[in-house]
Every structure is written in C-alpha cells, then in structure tokens.
Image (tube, rainbow, N blue to C red):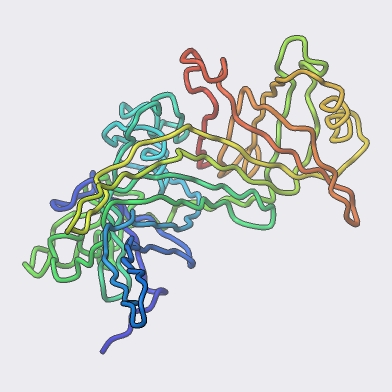
Length: 395
C-alpha cells in the first residue's frame, strides 16, 4: 500500500479531456491548502403509524451528486515568452475562464480580454456578459493518483494585499463531476522530465517546444509536448512595495480631481461570477449536474491604512466621504501591487465607489475603506463592463 502525500501534488488545467498539448493544457503551481471534493444529496423516507407495535424504520436513497467544489491558491507570476516576445502569466487560463467564454489564445493577436502583449499581460471583463463562461477541466495529480473535475467554471478570485506577503490569488469554483482517472493514462498529460528540453529553461524556448514528456502513457513516445510548463524565470511580486493612486472622479463631487496620498497597510479584492450549477431531479437514478450559468458580476474589496493628518491624506478622505451625502461617488483607483516599477500587477478601477471608512482603534488608529468596482454607467448595457482592468508587468 502506498500513501499519497499532498506535498507531491501538481495541478494541470486543460480545455480538452484527451489529446493534450501546450496550446490546450497548462500547469498551474499551487500552494498548500488546496481542496477538491464532491458530495451527494440523499433523501430519507420514514413512516409514522399508530398502534402498540408501530413500524419505525427508515430508508435512505441517494438522489443527486452535488457540483464538485475546488479551491487552491497560486502566486501571481509573469515571464517573457521568448517565442512570441510577449509577457505571459502562469495563471493566464484562470483569468481567461473568469472573464470570457472565448477559446483561449494568449498570443499578441489573441483574445483581447486575456492575452499577452509586448510589455504586459492584459485582463479585462469587456466580454464577460455571457450565461456560460469558458469551461475548463482541472487535473489534480496527488502523488500517485490522478483526479479530474470536468466542465469547471471559475467562480471567484480573491487577491490578498497583505504587505508582508507575496502577491497571490485564491481561486475557487465548481465542476460537474469528480472522477479518479489514474487507470486511464490517456486522460491526463505526461509529466515532463527535470531536464526540460535538454536543460533549457522554458522561457527561452518557443511555446511549441515546452513540456516535453519523458513517456507518453506507456507508449514510449518521448517527444510529446503535452502541456505548457511553468518557467523557472517567472517572477514573484513583493506586496511591501505596493502603491495606491486615488483621485476623485465625479463631476460635482466635493473632492472631484483631488489626488489623495494614502499608503496602504493591507487589503483585498474579490471578483465573483456567482455561478450556479443545475441538476435534474429524476426518480430511481442518481443525477449529476448538467451545467451552470453565471449570475451578477461582483467586484468588491477593502483597503486598510493608518489615519494620518497630512495634506490629502486618509483623514481628508474620511472627512470628504462623510460630507458627501450623494447616493453615488466615483474615484479613479489604481493599485500597483508590487510597486510602480519592476515585477508588478496593476489593478485599475476607473469608477470605484467608496464607503465611508470605518475607524479601527488600535495602537495606531487605522481606517478600513470598502470599495466596489463600477461600470461607467452602472448596470446599464452601456456600462461596457469597464469595472476593472488587470495588467501584469515583468519589469
């Protein structure tokens, strides 16, 4: 008997269930604490009758599989794709599935909503108004066993701005069915050898030459390129260097055009698709989820900072927000996660609505500032899904 250790786990994400290659399958390096499971709904039948010796039995029936839940965390990393001369990110497929329903293409002329460019990797939500977003398959290699969760939807991305940490995203979502595919080698990609392409780091190899497998499901094919490997040159982002730009951006607002000088001490951002899976209810069989649809798109978060008294600092912000009795306000918010230069991710919210900050009483007084990303015209179709753009820079 062999035990399976989570420390040896790897994750691969694909748009196919067979015929893997570096254009449809990607490795995403995850952190400890990942999870995946699938529960089942059951119905208990009982009887209740009068008399001296009543029947008191009960019988339980399995009725339907619940959607398979999954969650994991990955670092926000970018690298230069020498083959295409573009900036790429190791979690590109996840941003794509969160933001659009198009076929993935991260090249320079690829899908506009998630693609590499010469100086950055760009993500926006201009094409996210669909009932079904892009579906992916998650392949968990947990030491000696393989599991596949089919037809997954990325429901939520949570970004933590903790200034003592490394930039990361907590991804979560659901799929239709969780299956053990260990005994079907064609159902999962081969693992690459440590000597990627004869010792050459993937970042200097064209896309089609990365991820060369050592074996091919037992067939002895040693030239199959079955997934896109993570290059060791992919950079990490230090949150401690982060900066915030916050400018009043609503005509008639009491602080319109004021540029605030606020140094954050932490925060978070959640992007949620509010995905719902649907399952039939049929007698005598165990039903499985047949699909999903997206709900309202929500982008909310919180920033924390110290309460200071400098010009246009946090005390000025809380005073202006408290004096603004309008039901709407608008701020142009740009968070440079990792600093204004070097490896970083830039979150731009051109129409953020801020709540009146909450004063946090501690040794040093602080503020909690809740915000929500808004479209240019609220929930109208003309809002053009312009709530947020996310851009990775490698240098």
